Image (cartoon, rainbow over all chains, first blue to last red; front, side, top):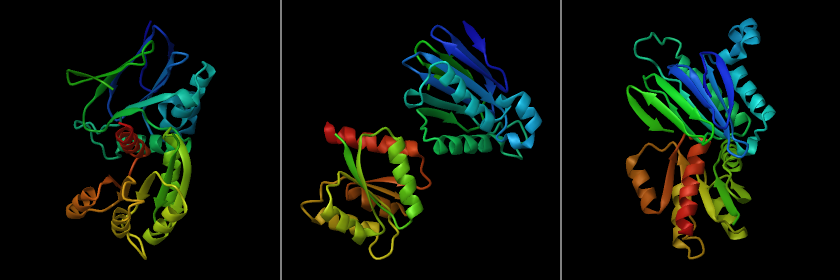
Length: 157
Length: 127
């Protein structure tokens, strides 16, 4: 089954599923994968910190990197994922050239992610971060393959 | 095989960060020894079996480059791989360190960078 992960959204998939998220600009796309139980999760978070709007964070924690990443890990554990087996990949956090990036959202999203991972002793398996491009990510749960499409180019992460 | 590390940096915070990065890296860790400058680092090398040294450059008493020179001049330490983690900007100095068979990681570093360099080094040692 193919599931689209929207902006400020998160989905968990099992073997046979493909998770897709479109148009990652300054947003963070985070993929977690446990190859043993073949469970994967994808987050598409917009903003770094939930403290800017706690009400919104309560109704939609996946909008924010700090609350979204924590919940993504929790969901993965609920589906049988284990932290010591987890493969973590990050995509996005760019600074789109056509937007006024006064607040450097992409950079701050990445900084908060790095802080969370460091605090929880988690390393990234791979990343495709920054630049000015927009990215679409296809995440195949059966294999853990993560494919990024941007500006007509396709590459494996 | 568990790898024994020596971390040499005058900042205890930096030593702790590097030690944590090693623990996160998934590498089979043995002992992690620490020293605050090059001289203390050489003393640790006398006291312990060290498989890999991670060394800062700018330190009091004896800097990292002097420590690496001493290591390379001694038969018991000249084969120990060295990774220099530093904010050194001088290309000439970096080249000089590479000639002394040291690997270089720029500060600020990511824990993934440390993992990748160590994995590459360990792979070369085992090859």
